[in-house]
Image (tube, rainbow, N blue to C red; front, side):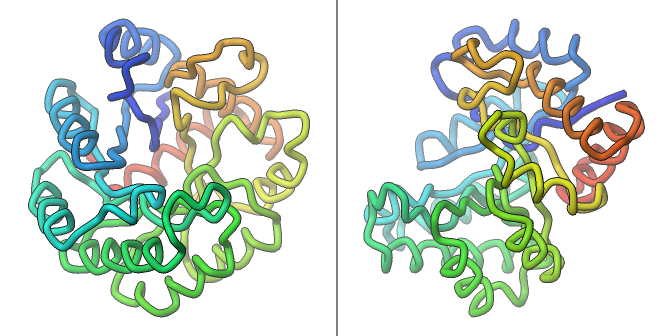
Length: 257
């Protein structure tokens, strides 16, 4: 059995300072491949540097919607140049966050659209951040994503109805440990309808440790095994069969050999 953590922030201080141990614990738990995510120019470079250090580690780079107000043409040009690195397998995370509204909606939409253009030019998949902006996110995708072949909604916490819309578009959905939370019935109902050939797993660490590890404040890839066990049971599948299926989906999506 092997698992891929398709969305982790391993450059964060709480994890990178002890990265060798983090990776060792992850491997021991069966999580043997990682996609570490950049969210600003500094983190993007760090993500690539970290991916270069470890076998089976890859990077995705982008500008988080929180920081859209600070994104210039030069920022986007630098992002495109960094994305040429062979360890970069996706653009993102990018999208819309109307919960915190750290950037104006118009700036978020502008930067989101620019990320989609870069991904289309480089033939890379896109990792979507969508919080309290589902309809608006789909509108931007309708307008700009025609040439982007692969899109995944990361840390999905929407409804089954929204999941069906995402699936009808041909997109993918990734679940975090949130699906194990007691108050996450909406997310569980969504997870039930997502087929394993469209489903991926992630930690989004260092956030959101899954049950029964909620008291571990710093989430890490090793804990994703609990999410995998929970979802396998939810779908009535053997854990190994479920893990192998979602891993095959992840490898194909990100073109990871």
